[in-house]
Every structure is written in C-alpha cells, then in structure tokens.
Image (cartoon, rainbow, N blue to C red; front, side, top):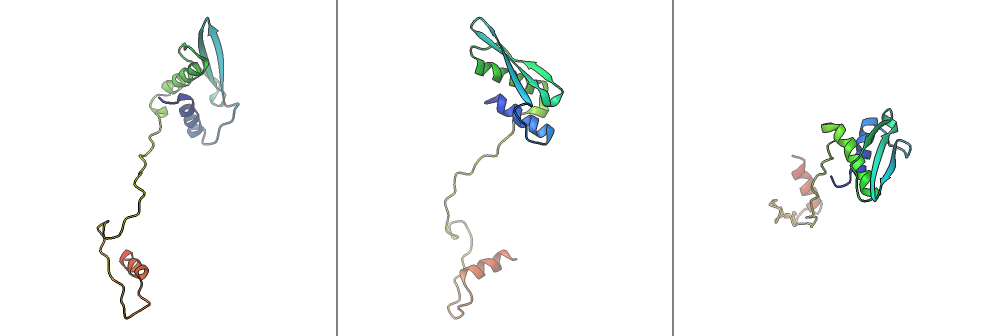
Length: 123
C-alpha cells in the first residue's frame, strides 16, 4: 500500500459520503526507545482505535496504524483502482485512424468537412 493514510482518508469519506475534517481522524504516538508506535482514532466512526506496528520513525508508524485500520475493514477498504492514463494524446489524421475521408463538394460551398463529419456521425 503506497500511502495508507491517504487510502484511509478516502475510505472514510466514501463511508461517510462527505468530506472529512481534521477532527475526524487523529493519530497519537508512543515511543519505545528508538522505535515509534502510532494509534489512529476514527472519531467519525464512533471512536474506533487501531494500533499500528512499531516502526523506526513516526511517519512510518502512522502509515502502519492507517494500514491496520484499513485491514480491519477488509474488502470494503481495498485501495482504489485508478484507470490507466492514455499517454497517446497526439492528434491523428482521419485517414490514419481508419476513417473514410470524403472530399468536400467543389460545386457547393455549403458542404464543408464539418458538415460531412456531422452527417457521418449522425447516422
């Protein structure tokens, strides 16, 4: 899970069907020597608390606590699947795209490429 805290925020917003505020999710830290452990409290869901695994730094400890909360909610909190982006944004000529291109009528100035395209798409 790339960013469990963000995934948890999105999950809570989907559950509540509204944006969340700072008071809705809170993290508390405990230090054990040079190790850190975080506990996430979901105030917006009745005060549910989840402790994460011990980590070397506070930031990772918070991620672990958020991952623990997501794991508790099982399949309902699965990371969101983002559709793959189409990086091929270059314009192509109609003939390269496999479209038939009709030449505009030389005798009638009212028939343009735009009107031919509108007629073809209107079928």
